[in-house]
Image (cartoon, rainbow, N blue to C red; front, side, top):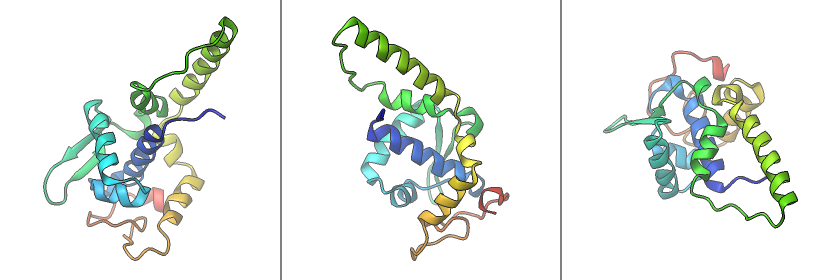
Length: 161
């Protein structure tokens, strides 16, 4: 199994959280931290990179937080993982065959991830159910998904119906 770094997985999860809550307004980093089980300092590092790349935009002050920088359909999972893995270290090839195999596999994986957008995932019923179920039984439930929030309810309830 191919493994992505924790930073890539957390970045994708955080962006999915923003995509699910897009109609509800800006999402505070503290909410992303709590809901996705990511430390606030780590999610802050991730969002610094996402902000610089234009994948998220922040709103300061009370009621502020983050929203997607572009429509969910225009943000590919491949773009997010490439951004997060950009400073990662790759394993050197041990042979020409090894290099060729991994170059081919990497290209196919990149193509696959680049063809998947946040919207592709958010629109799946099993994703909506997982997001809603993730917050079941917690005392800080919002009416949208169960997450801690003081934002306005979304205008479109498509994701939560």
